[in-house]
Length: 564
Image (cartoon, rainbow, N blue to C red):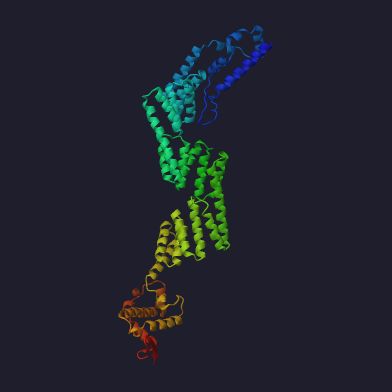
């Protein structure tokens, strides 16, 4: 009786073990470093029974069982009919069954019905799991379905079963190449050439593998030199042969982000995440794009997610730390500015600018913020320089153009101000921007005329009395009679200044003309031809007419005025 139960236990354990084995893919992927996923699709009842037959004890062991033992087994509820059926199947019949499935798979493969072909090849493997060609055929089908990692597992199993299986080595190499493992691919193609030295496909694929290794080397050098365009170029070339390599795509996406091509970088990273939502590198690149677009809170979320998927991801860790520090420092600067602590705000913005030189968009805003503080502190030249830096980082940054234009206006650099306002108005045609441009153009026009206030040495808000007093002083200072003993050159210069003083007084002493002059109107358009102006008449009228004054010498180079 113990023998009977021991046999029952042996049967149950062996069959369970064999059934579980059938529900796994055979092989181990050394590149993925994980167990293959279970594959139970298409296991036929016949295949399962055939496998269970192989798990049964030897025929000699079965024959030693007594009739009583068999009856005890039946009494325990173990059916005998399936086992009797399996005993009738020979190895030859099982092989014919597997070949039938294989032929069906080949027919579907020719018709490009790869899903059904995969189903048939899987049935063939279930019946005869030791046949290398079945794994090779299924690998070819999986490659057509772009399931390269699964195809790699089948190719590796095929060559484990038959090391001389040339197509198995070729497909293994092709899978390695498509997944970006050019070194492993090279070894596979070299093995093919050992088996078949004239294999042209292996020769070409070996060249492709060597080219990928060279592109990887150049990309590494380019990244160290921050030549991100070179890296993108190398990865594009490498992806022509390694189209399924996520590593190459992620590196390309990272460099696109560092070049400021955020939409392209996000597109590449999103494609990877659709295929593998746990890819830490792709999550990092998504966060990097958001970080560089000044969406710091969302960026931090992606960095944290990347670190959950890959706790040792150093780039994500550094980027997360920089993002948090940059946000905190910027907010401190904004708070100090709102509270009127301009010196403190200036220093905080300066500190923030040192955190991450690669964050172009945020740094552009920081430069503009510091320029605003600089203008409050009357550091206009520094403010203009900061605005220029902001614009060099982001040519579309309207706020920086407006801030610089205002600084140009404050420093009377009207041509530069007009140029910036024109740029702004071309980009955003608003009423406000149109008025700013118009004001700058008016100031530019006024700056090209004679500045009569400057000629008289008075402020633009000078009173009528202050204007008369200034004219008296300047007219006497530059009167030609006073310089009659000077050289011809000096006399000519003083006569010119005397005339300008008269023009200035004529305009600024007349409220109507002064108003039009202040408004930027051209006085020549009003019929006043300043070129025909006689300054002596104004001088005589102001000082009381002929004989009202005279210049007399009181010594060499000294004069005084005597009024009648």
